[in-house]
Image 1 (cartoon, rainbow over the protein chains, first blue to last red):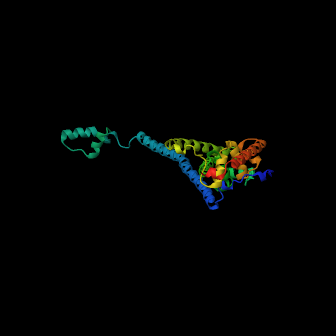
Image 2 (tube, rainbow over the protein chains, first blue to last red):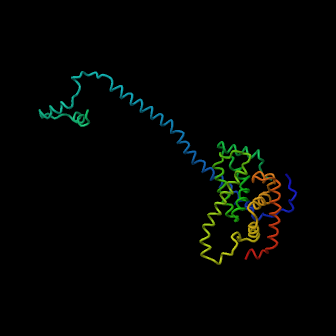
Image 3 (cartoon, chains in turn green, red):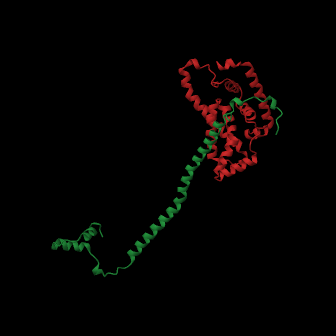
Length: 114
Length: 186
């Protein structure tokens, strides 16, 4: 669109920031660089956010497998006969009666209530 | 006339919205001066206007995904510039009130007058205009925008843009004729 009042134009060239070409280029570069830096920040956060769900899912799956395996092992009848099962309390009693020291493993079992 | 058409602007904005950061540079080249013109119309100090324009432009590029109408990027950007410039003026007012209270001899000094003859006169003359007149005359006579472009960016009719320009120029010429350079520089 052509303007018919160009002769009336006020000369604002003294206020023109692009008069100093080098300085103006620096300003353009500064704006672009700052905008880039600002965009890269959220992108990193987005990356973490992107991987957080699969990470959580993998951790949950691993926990489920571990729990399942533990539960299955707990339900499986022991191959050992009941008589052969270690009885820590009996061991401690026999230790206190007979003075025979028990081993550290049995002692730990008693302490942990197993 | 703007360096970019609405169509070209919209294409660049869409690229930026889709993460193409190479669109930042042409957008800044096309619109940073306009941002400066609007900032200058509000803050009335060229160096401050440069800072405000840069800051506002960075913010605009940061949240460019929220520009719903890419073809109207200019109007969207200039609204951000205007808001930030007004905030800047408010911060400056709060900063400078205690300083002026401490030195009453500076109270009568024109806040817009800076060193430099022509520049200082223009800035002081612009202070006599309304904010809208300043935006229109700076976008037209400094940034070389057409009335259609100004009307689109500022949300007014082309006729209103022409009227504001006419009144602004008349007021500026009147001010410049009344105030000799020595009066402003002193």
